[in-house]
Image 1: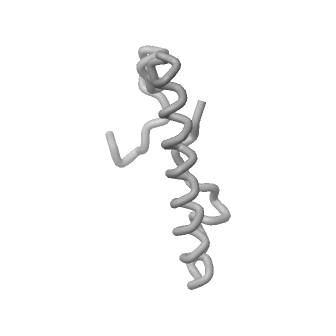
Image 2: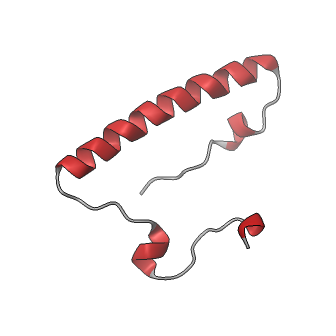
Image 3: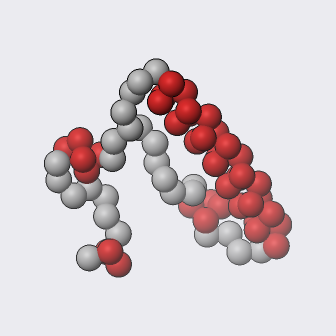
Length: 65
């Protein structure tokens, strides 16, 4: 199971140094995510959203509804 949100400590920071840390974190996170997905798919495992698996809406944002 993967979470698709940035940790609050980084997401809420606004100074210039925080902006650099956010970009580095995002770059690292995307690289790691790509590696994980590639390995999962290479093993023939299907990736599903939790809402698909549970067949109910899960963890949606208020703005989306």
